[in-house]
Length: 338
Image (cartoon, rainbow, N blue to C red):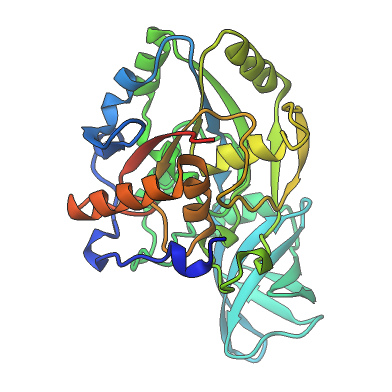
């Protein structure tokens, strides 16, 4: 039985990537699918076979961070977690004193929102008009807390995959940040198939597990959609004896959430799926992923996928070789061990 301590490790602060590289495909790739081989990310074309299927998460990061003030003048920061309909959302609010239900707060000195009931660590908010256009106009990209700088216009492009389509995420599906259109074209020219799912990544992806007993941890809910075409492509790939490769832990979680009865089911839903070692995977053969935070649910997920010992070995190697970690960092290719 694994505990939280089993997923801790020492990471030099200098290995936490603060900026993306000039070229998306210029990152390094640790091929941990058989042994440990140091490669460039562009080598991925050589590591995926004709007929294999890459599954991308096409969620689009919204400008979910807003700054503002209460009517008393107290400053605050809002981070949208999820949009429920055109004008309602839940969010985290950082302020010296939490606002009460019914409070009106002014955001970006441009519009007012009403604070509703508190739901655990979140507050419900009602906006004056459709939220997405307001965020596009006034919001800021929600860079992760370990990137110690403010978001710039550069991040509006680079903290977004080139295939991002459906707005709703407050964190990027970072494994996909390494792909650019020419690389995707090369893969498709080789005969590699591509498909998409949507999982709107929540801010909870950065929340460390705080209980030593992993069974006590509660995941935040995230919305996902599996298109019929994607479910069909996975079935065809499997039937042909080829491999399904999830691009990122978010794609994997969406596919596994929709596979809990064994067969992958198309459709939409919410998932709180918490994958730890011992989990049996249903729909994914290989995983392309970045390097994750100590004590995080994502580190536990990749340990379940590739095997605990393999991940410890890979992370020790990556630190020794000075790979870049986290959202703007390097990538790793893994095979499923179960």
